[in-house]
Image (cartoon, rainbow, N blue to C red; front, side, top):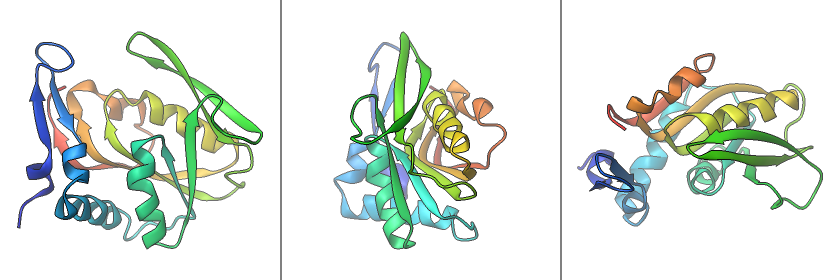
Length: 174
């Protein structure tokens, strides 16, 4: 059987020279690749006590919802500013060339709930750092952060050093 890494399409010099883009869509479009990804995330959580899965749009939805479903947990979406219909809390975070704002419903996480964050990729860690702040502002506790892929060269784990972070695939570069 193939490993999950075998399903990742690597595109050299995208979006700029010297960068290797790791394409998650090639995992998603193959039933075996998708199963390996979801099973790998579930395996990371087999001994974790948690109440909710939180995931950022859009790929955090893709990987987080099947995890939540398989474990009979709720799923909390984190979206770009202005996309959620009820009262929200927000966090601003840094992008490569500017800032962005994400939001979560104000009633999405109850005080004391244990939260797992799921996303496709950790690069610089800025988005997930902002999400941990939102969860904690609502009184939740982040007990684990899971990624399908990690670009270790961008040092995203450093921003998340106070959390239990895991990834299925780890690429040493950027």
